[in-house]
Image (cartoon, rainbow, N blue to C red; front, side, top):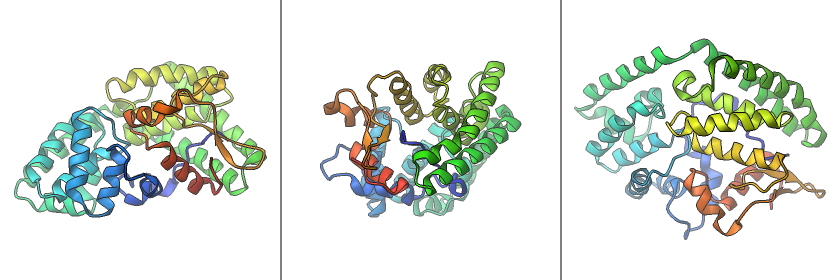
Length: 310
């Protein structure tokens, strides 16, 4: 087992749901350097000012957020009462492609609800709608739908293997992973990497997931990593996804990983961290790409797979 990413199929759009990161936030120590996850913990405690201040500082210093984190920046800033700053973030982030615009318009949260009640909202809404139309004009809708369909098949197979206890059950996922990878290789050869601009946040995430599970073809994973690294430079790929694939590639080559995202099952059934470079600065590297501290990540893995993690 290699820390296989599992995405709840029925809750793909719930990027602002506090429960999504609850295990990570609960495991974070009080002395942890300010990060997205300490901000999330503050939000869970209704400390909107602390949440907004932390996320604002991270945003200013270019520290990436997990997928959907930009919406939490707007939510906390607005919930803390600074509507002008929240609207400024909306305008600054609109063109990034990382704002879940439908959730910005409809998600029921204290800060977002307050923004929609603000007299300035109708003008902002018009800009949001215009940006949505602009994004849609650039999208390859059939490719996005194909990616999401293949992601759903992947996740069905992954969840079935986990329910069966892992181990040999992972072999049952091979036909789906291999078919998905063969298909995506052909897509890339014809159209290039399907990034956020072309297939949306969810479509780009699906493409990454297909590659992440293509352990049978490490050369393809290395090829896709190079494409994703280039895409990430312009915001067309998620930094945390790049980090996860960055670890997958050297592990396949028998080398230490960089971000500590890959685990394997030991003889006693416990999931353990695979060899990782420079453990003393690991959490700093993780923070720089929007990943939670290692101990919080272990707690999340344990909760996801129902196994102890060391």
